[in-house]
Length: 267
Image (cartoon, rainbow, N blue to C red; front, side, top):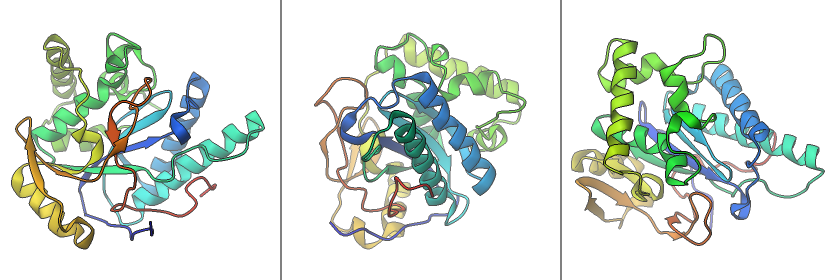
């Protein structure tokens, strides 16, 4: 399938997912997950990437970001994916693709949907059965929001507070703990595929406007309603979001967002 043009929607929030090639557990060791975070930090410095949350698992990553420029996201992800793959292949004396050809991007409305997506990312490794609470997973944004580092800071806490309508960091932290606790208490840790296999999630107005903004590639796509959310879906194939094989689904081709050539190159 032909590669599509990039799309840039100013100030839009995107949930990015990128999986390892053939669902291999190429990030199963902490050192490799830390290297991915290192290059995420470099992308923040070089391109001004606005990071709102993240989780690095053994075979895929989640990244919640705000679009701040038409080259920021593609440049950042090409750098992160390329350098992570290069370092791993050199160290392991390995050849071949490290990542799936395309990463997937879902536009998220910056209201209560953003908060739900934030918590959904936090609970990724709880859903996988690896931990009982997100604070137990080192390579996730939960601990950084709760205990920000003075030097190695990835998350734009001021940007996150602004989007959440919160003025005080302590209030954000308290609310964040409460959101996660409520989700855990309700056992709201099941996989909700629309966060990772859709084009857009939000109110009906937001999804309709996003569909219009993205233009031709979205023509013919129907807007659906699920769990009180409006969703613009795309075609799906089998995808394992965590550790089990042949479960779940995600887009086979990311036709709509920042599709870059040579994603496994250095960048």
